Length: 122
Image (cartoon, rainbow, N blue to C red; front, side, top):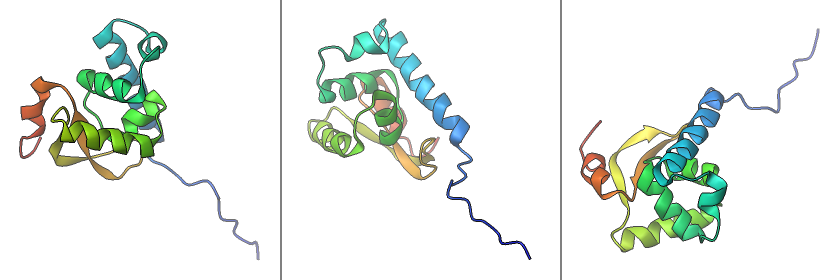
């Protein structure tokens, strides 16, 4: 009788979406600000990167952190600060995060998207 070997690699059905989402975020930032991501990141603090990137794209915290290479722990603090300043809004509804596969809320710092994210559902 052959022994079954359990794989230590976890299957992630969203693996292909992970790279597509990161690319989508980076492309939106590059189009929104008219510079490459490397140029966009030059001379900016994490808070500035986080706030300015969210003006171009609404996404989950984890997805944005992955695209900008910001530690999630740091981003949670930044998110809270921006919420307290009234510059960031979270959606009233949850979507499936393309990075983790868990349900999460979308975030944005774009005033034009505030009312859309505050809608009761998509």
